[in-house]
Image (cartoon, rainbow, N blue to C red; front, side):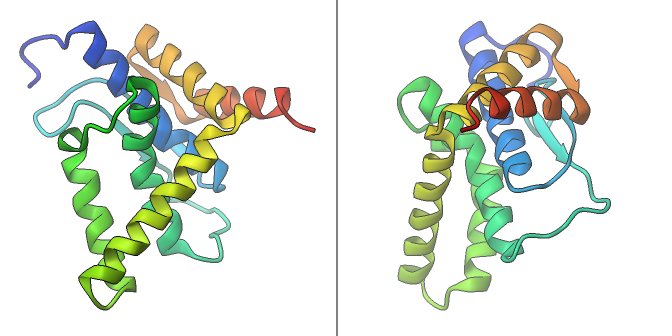
Amino acid sequence: MDSAPLPQTELTATAYHEAGHAVVALFLGRPVHEVTIEPNSLRLGQCRLNKGNFKPSKDVLEGEILILLAGVAAEARYRGDYRWEGAVSDLRQVRHFSSLRATNIKQVERLEQRLLNKVEHILSQAGPWLAVEEIARELISRTTISGRSARHHFDLAMERFAK
């Protein structure tokens, strides 16, 4: 995976995917440590969240699932369709967390669909989507950005569309 460079379309899709994780994390009040589209043997990119102090949301488990689903949802909004095969690791974690909340597969699937709809709604708003675009553009230019830079782009985008 890290021997051959990614084609530009895949690099851009990866940037949108990782930017989606970062934006929804920031939207939910989770601090971001770093966002990268530097591939390694396990993944094409990564959004690392700070484990430090933050005010947890009312529903921590739901927040984690939303952040996990945000990558594939942002990539789908950019591409025009879902590419589930590229998000296997995220989806495995989503299923694990969903199974902690629901008691049977039907409930798990309904929960996951409800949360996917919720993350799509977040990303359909002008501010968060502009933040995804700006962070993706920065990732394509620099490959890796700090959480501080991601926060800066997020704050500017949200201020632009504040009512």
